[in-house]
Length: 118
Image (cartoon, rainbow, N blue to C red; front, top):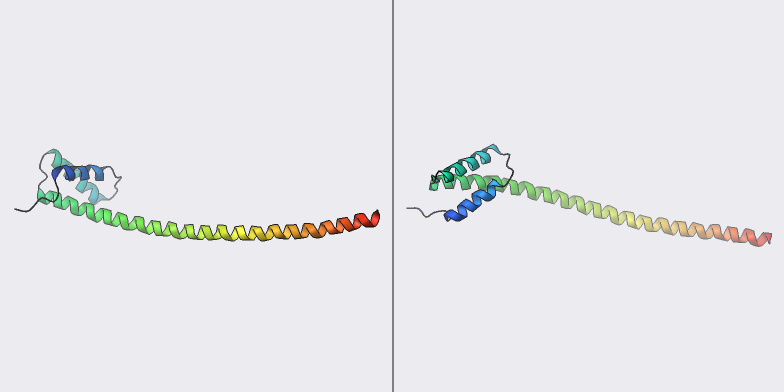
């Protein structure tokens, strides 16, 4: 006789946890409904459990792959946003120095004009 995949309480906990996810995949939804019905009827035999676990593995492997790709994309965009922020901060510093320099020149002109009049 084959050894059980996992203890019944852990299997039921996994089924409940998977049931908490919002699943749109038709095959996964079907597998979830079937195993829940089998468990309720105390008819979740080893082949049914294996079939369910295979469906869960397929679904969540693809789901994880998609999430990791999205994370890589977000990380790339964050790197870009950080670079833009850094560049804008540096550009702002240059503009502030230009303002200070032009104010100095204008002040000298104003001071010179005041001295000439007075």
